[in-house]
Structure formats: structure tokens, C-alpha cells
Image 1 (cartoon, one colour):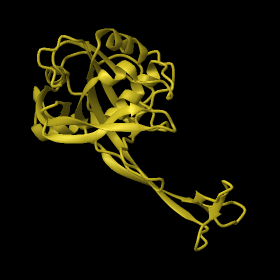
Image 2 (image 1 turned 90 degrees about the vertical axis):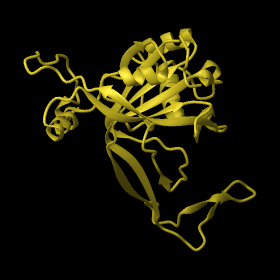
Image 3 (image 1 turned 180 degrees about the vertical axis):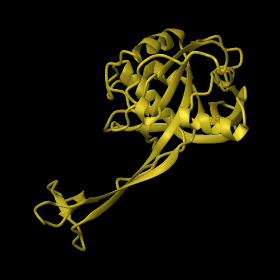
Length: 265
């Protein structure tokens, strides 16, 4: 749904880190990433924060609606891997014999090439709405998560803050009102291009909408390792005019500690 007339609270998240990876169709030897967070990835992060095991039914999580704003698109990173048996033996293939033993590769193969793709230096704002009790519980859970949180893959650790707070309004209204969350180096570059401190910036966003003109196949039905299932959702793509949040020249600097600050985050 687009969120029109919806009075449910909206949880706003900042999804940023040195690396992110949001795959939606990745075979073993090529793990790709979308250019923005998938719905399955964001719901997986929230389910982990709430302490849901992968085998548990998603229940109310199926009712969550999401919008994602691209505050800093980042760039694509390819991680090249080779896999081989340290004993020098030929690699097995995925197929197995009638006795359940993996078959050898034919022709014999000693090295397998795999490639993994990541987004580096990217920042997104995700707005999530749904049943009020669930949204309020998730608001607390993301700062006291039951399981470690990740940006698509376990190796992709988020920077702080993740939680920006609870807001009211439609998904589009909330994403339009939330100040720009780009890293300091990106903000400085924008100021130089604009030759000043512009009050607003135009950013792209993708929002759940049953009447949307695009379809994405990333809405989760089950995270169970042996029964991973997804369905499609309709979305619309929009451009939003967003406040930059640039402080006045004489404003005091922001306070607080972030362990990733030295990396420019």
C-alpha cells in the first residue's frame, strides 16, 4: 500500500556501512547485489533484531510496508575468489550418487572461481510501517538486537546510528521529511558543487504501492534454510525533495562517538 491515510507509526532506519550486499537472485558462483536494499534484507535485519529464528513463521512481518531512499549510492565492488582442495584433489560437483556421495567433476576441475559483489560507501534511509505494536517493538529491538545485525550479509556490519526514530505520516511523507544522511565527504562535495549550503536535495526512492508500475521479487515468505521463499511486490519509483540539514556556519559541531568516524562515516 502507498500509505495514504495510514496512521500507523513509521520506523526510520539509516542503513550505512563500509560494505553492503543486497542480493535477490544469486547462484553459488556469482553473488550479486542490487543497487538498494531489498525488502527481504530489511525484514531479515528487523527479524534478527527481534530475536526471530529463521525457522519461525514471519507472521506480522508479512504485513510490513517499506520505502527506501538512496542518500548516497556508493560504488560496486567485485570480490574475486578461487576455491580448491588443499590436498590437491579434484573438486566434487553439486550432484550426488544414489548413496548420497558427491560426484567428481567431469571433466576434472581443480579450481572453482566465485565472485561476490558489494556496495561500498553507500547510505540508505529505510522507512517501515505496519502493525503499531510490532513497529514500536522493533523500534526498541534495533538498538538492543537479539542477533547481530547485517546489511544483507553477515560480513557487512552497519555503522551507527541505525535507528533514526519513529515518525508519523505516509512512507513518502516521512522519506521526504527525514534530513539527508550522506557521509560528511559526500555532503562537502555537494556543497562545493552547489557553491553554498542548499536547503534541499533531490533523492530517488522506491516505495511499496499496490498500484505501482514496477514489480520486485524480494518480499520474503520464509527464511527457513530449507524452505526459503519469496513473492513479488509492486512498487513506484519517485524523486523526493529532502532537507539537507546543513548547519549554520556558526553552529556548534555535533557530539557523540562513532567508531567508524575515522573512515569518513
